[in-house]
Structures are given as C-alpha cells and as structure tokens.
Length: 189
Image (cartoon, rainbow, N blue to C red; front, side, top):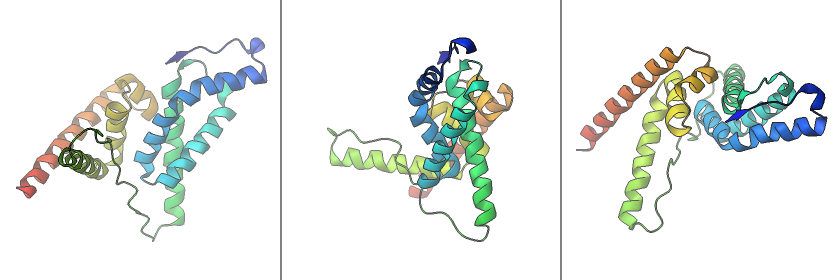
C-alpha cells in the first residue's frame, strides 16, 4: 500500500489521527501475525502490537510516506525483539513455553468430510511445528513472504537486511522446511 502524507501545514491533529488509522488499521492482522510468530506467545503478541501502534502514533510525524505496511511491520518487528529481550532478562531461568506456538494455519472447509477436516488440521499442526523449529531470522522472513505476502524489497525494509540476504534466508528456510517435512514423513511411514 503506497500512501502519501499531506503537507504538514494541511494536517490538523484530527487529520493526522485519521491518516494514522488509514495506514495502521488495514495492517493490524498482519502485524499481530508477525508478532505472534516472533514472540511465540499470544498474550505477549497482543502487548507487542499494542506497543507498536503506540510507538507508530508517537512517531507518525516522521513517516515520510511510501510503503505503510513495511513501515508498520518494521515497528512491530523491533518492538517484538525488544519484548523478547526484556522477557529473557526477567525470566532467564524459567521455561516460558506455554504451547503458544501451536497454531492452526488454516480452517478446515466446513463442507469437507470429517476425515478431510482432520487431515487439514493435522497438516496445519505439522507445518506450525516445522515453522517453530526454524531459526528466528529464517522463520521471520518466511512468515513475511509466504503468510503476509510481502515482496523481497518489503521484507528487506522490515528486517533491515539487504534483498540478497532476504532471498538467501528464504531459500535456507524452504530447504529446512522441505528437509523437516521429508524426515517427518519418513518417521510416520
């Protein structure tokens, strides 16, 4: 989504808030999805998105137009990484996994047979398990590309790495996903 900010002299506080809402609201689901995949905790992801929106509103005057989705995702990413660092400092010796990374990536077709619905849920659970096993920088790029459908350039803006690095991380993530899926299929046989 390309968005251009009106000239400063034309922007009243109400206009600025409306502009911010126009930029942020269409991207909240994607922001939450990214936060959830980074922090792997639904409650912390809620807090991350809320903090990111507050930060975005606070610094909206510095937004120069351009790709609003990448701008917001960058704020969410940075906020999520800060939240993880804070949590690690506080909970250094505690196991904080609460099963939050068990996510259903697709909802079964309501018209499907019970067997097909179960198979779909099992496939989604397997995918979530394999995604969770990826290193964070690979998982982050893969989620942004495949689930949020960002371009390589947008992912580079969000992650702060060159496009070539994004492409390399995506290739490695896909290789690891494929390898994990093959290994899991071999174990099930």
